[in-house]
Amino acid sequence: MNRPRVPTDIAEFERALAQSVTIASRAMPDSPMVSIVLCAESGIRTVACSHARAEPLDELQSAIGDGPVLDVIDSGRPVTATDLATDSRWRRFAAESPGILSLHSEPLESEGSLLGVLTLYSDHVGGFTDETRVAVRVTAEHIGVLYRTALDAARMREIAAQLREALTTRAIIDQALGIVMAQRRCTSHQAFEVLRHVSQDKNVKLHQVAATIVETVSGEPPQQSRFEEPPASHPR
Image (cartoon, rainbow, N blue to C red; front, side, top):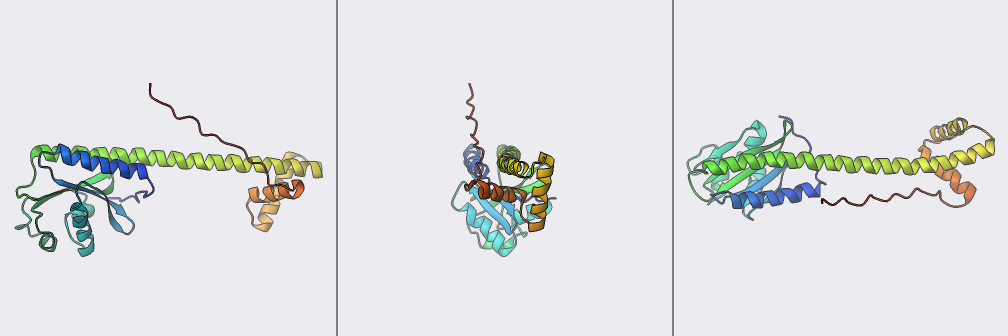
């Protein structure tokens, strides 16, 4: 299964995950410890947990290279253990995490790609109720939606930033074009070709060439366009 590189700079997404695990833990009748790990370039990273004990359990699996979370990442399928003391799959993990007797790890997916793993840890033998398993699946699907929403928002912010930069540099280039047209008595197309040739010859970006021309002629840095963010809309 594909593993996308989860954007680590989406603070809203990680805050939403923290709220999700808290709500999920309270809503589940078994009151398990809940954690979420995301796939990162360097391995796995715990980004949210409902109890302080949960994060070290994730970190232990990463350190020893074995455990249910890593099995889910490898297979893309959920895993369950109803009694770790008698389960032969993760003997070292079980030995180094006393008190954890059952668990369930659910893959977190978005558009066919694996984001990470949602894990429930319990101090009780016997696994989890049917209601808890349903809640886990619903929570996992909800997190996939959160991820897509956060990623779309991040992309829109990036596009907006690129647009603002493009408009700003365009304003500087237009100022330089006016200067070249006046000095050489040429068309805007011919003036643009002058800037382009200088940019290529000096291996300098076009807007930097334009800024240098404007500052040389006027003695001041070029004027930049002012952009004001639109007011936030409020639901009625």
